[in-house]
Length: 250
Image 1 (spheres, rainbow, N blue to C red):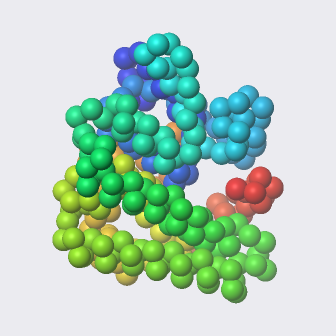
Image 2 (cartoon, rainbow, N blue to C red):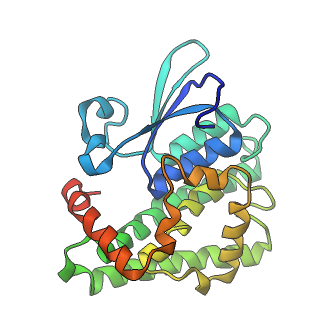
């Protein structure tokens, strides 16, 4: 819980991106104390030497934590962080299942599905639709990545319909739900209409009702204003961001 009076051992290095907010969502839902270090991606803070000691890949999110023996550790990659938090801190299995159970195995499958599929594809749709040089914002690349993102949303839609469940794995919202949610919240930015997927939209609304989820999306700052922007405002936001995104290869 950012701002809590309890003494935190976790420091979250993050920015207002889909991958960043999935970790703060989990931290808030678990009610864990943590400190926030906001990295300004526009100044390439994530490429500075001090941060490369934490994550050699120069990407957010990452966390620092202290083990019971006093040793400090670093965890990077959002999926790895979510697994770490669940396995170390979710002893009551509020957002996870016991290791080795069917629920745990299915959680891992959907978590990796998001990290290996939905995130990269939607991220590329974002890039070619919003940030690439203007002459490249139409044509094969953006069409390919938007269509693949829609296909993956269709996979989610079909899974939720088949299972007739509130969440991805039955009636327990897990780290897999938070991982997927962080991208579904930004469907419009990639040019995907969530209304094409009514079951998935209902799932999104349910996950957002879980205490701590919305607060987690607002760490380190509110990001969902993108949804309320006009088309012109979105274009201007993307224009300002495109220079450093292209420069950093983000």
